[in-house]
Image 1 (cartoon, rainbow, N blue to C red):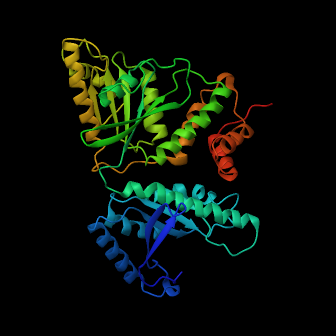
Image 2 (cartoon, one colour):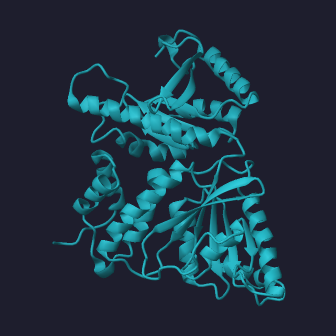
Length: 427
């Protein structure tokens, strides 16, 4: 504390010099007698710097660095100052330091303070729990210092792109729906060409996906077409496979810059509790209601006016508490003739407009789920295990470390979180 007396800029290279960033180190807040400049002056310096960078459109990420102690209202006060200047146009991440002796791992600080941070009204795009000490001997501290370095680099790499307002950034869309709803046909409709096969493997039930790059009207999109949980139950073997597949999906979504839009594909027909379950799995459990969700109703080739279907059924969606930001009534089946072909071309315009509307730069920044997305998914899927059997922690940890490449400490933590509130069966 008290070391930084003015704003300093540093050019930093990461990823073996492949990524170059400019970091601004600012005077500290609330340092009292330990500080070298008054708190109000420090706030003025930071506010002026943020305003200047915002005017130049030259700020992509804010790193809020705090000492790893209990979350307090003072921490919230500083957060509010930053947020008042940048609004929601720049992502803010939290870095908690001085955690070299935190047990069982540095990430434990976040688990201890996450609820308090939320209760104080603070929202962060991401976080890292670290130590900056590198001069003390000992393999454990050296390992923690290396993990801290990697965590900071990953945090900067991942979230700096979310603060860029370039229109060339690919928007990420997560497409989901029951088997046979027409997801692949919907991908082809948006693309204007055949990209996705329309004969899905009916035997698979775990969370796998196909990835498609689609460009239209000057915008660029990456669509993740998921193969969801169509079976009513999962066996332990399928669950462990799903652990790996879900983590890979979350990792890839984060690498792409987060999730900009959830696209729920539904085949026209009776609204069922299964439809509601799929909606809740993706919108509530996986994405914590933080991602815009729209719905595409397919198989409407026989309607005189496709929008009539929504007029007849929108109240039923409300009954099942399926609330969406927008909808599109479409015909996704191609290679028809006459009026059906006209419906198909009309549907392409409709679905593209819907996607563009809810992925514009004026929408909230893309949401990156990270571990929350992964854990929420695995908890939900764990509930589908057959015969009341329970996946053991010793089964989960090897999958997370060997198959997913997660560090042992983080793997144990995630396994504990997934197993939370579960009473193991006798064995």
